[in-house]
Image 1: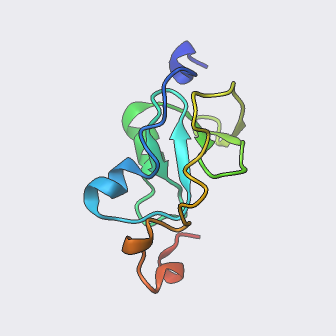
Image 2 (image 1 turned 30 degrees about the horizontal axis):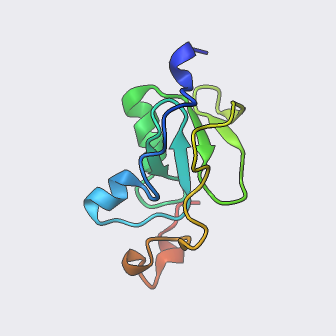
Length: 115
């Protein structure tokens, strides 16, 4: 794995999926890129921005950005990964709902998730 796959000093890009925020979308759960801090939505989310970020950048490792979760995913190996502690915060704010953000989640959100 490349030395640049993880930068433990870079903070997350924000409390939510940066791409969904830019487009007015919503997410189910969040993932944080270990190389650059990009926060993207998970593959169950409609837009799947975390995976798109990996495809666009080649940054293979993400860490869950959900409160209480500390697991890693390695896209290049299609398997769980591991890594060091990252710059805080380790998760989105605990009072932020999932799915979120609350004002953009449609009433039929469950039917819009990817399996």
